[in-house]
Image (tube, rainbow, N blue to C red):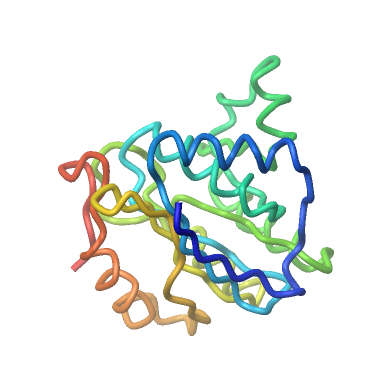
Length: 199
């Protein structure tokens, strides 16, 4: 693999050689590359898209393990049952009940205010099925916590996981998201029919 990785000192690390080796092995076996550049900031939101397959989680988590960066990620609470739940929590997973409106945003904003360093990853589509409009929870969290948003992608055409656009939300969703949606137009998901970009 020909990876490009830039991790500045402000980024919270999670050094574990065994997990790093597992992440590298998964990506190497499937022929994936990593092109990740993090901002020199201790706190920010990462949005990860497209999300059209369970493989997105596998390759995305492998990249996180390879990078040895402590990233917390939000997923539906039903994934955190039993031994599987313990495993996901150990990897940074945060269970969320999607039926509870608003509470998740406020709780996450409070978590950012209390932490010296925190990275939270969110899949803005909220589902593997086609969704014409993205969920805006990540945007409201970033706005309330006054942290930037880093755009991450998983591109099946190039077999590459990486980061690109970084922005600070202004409160104008349409204007702030224009370059984000424009960027994702060039990214190929596992199932293209399940990925929609807002116009």
